[in-house]
Image (cartoon, rainbow, N blue to C red; front, top):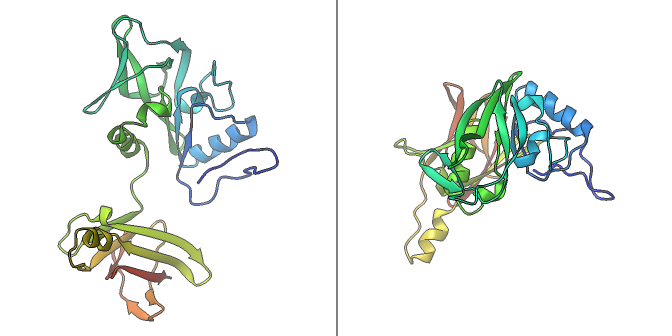
Length: 262
């Protein structure tokens, strides 16, 4: 969900309940009031991921002073050397950094990834700091560095974002998350969950017969500790199971199904 401040269009007053992470782009324009709300959000257990100059929050992006949440200071801007350039090592990936990045100096933060240059050696490229009950991640490159490398963006999300709220497994225990889309919305009757099986489209394209399958869908019990589940509009009652912080129902999307959780 986007939180925007735009004259005559939209102004965000509060961070919506249930949001667990905020992403601040490199060229985000924030007010001091915005920064204060973000500070309270993170310290209360949320997470923030800033890119480039976004580490300053309400500071000018061109020459930011890092917000204390991030546990780093900024010693100016580091342009890529003309000779051999600058690269970032992140897990098994090695990304080119064509644009200047903030020169992070770690205080209470720890480095998750490093940028390397022939002249300066290693520079922190992605850092993590504990802030109250939450975490603040500072990514020195702008988000555009990740645009053409989906696996790098996926690795960043895995490192920075909280654990998934939803788990999808086949009845033999295999992860089948990629097969389904799950929509959740609150309703006066409870939490409405709509599950869509994309396998039907894949099989039709191949000229094959679609075969629906049972799936065990689990929700983080801290998100919504439901005790009852009903398939609508059929009125079929399901028996949820609870185990290790997950509430689970067995569904048969063929190719979709809607369930009300209470």
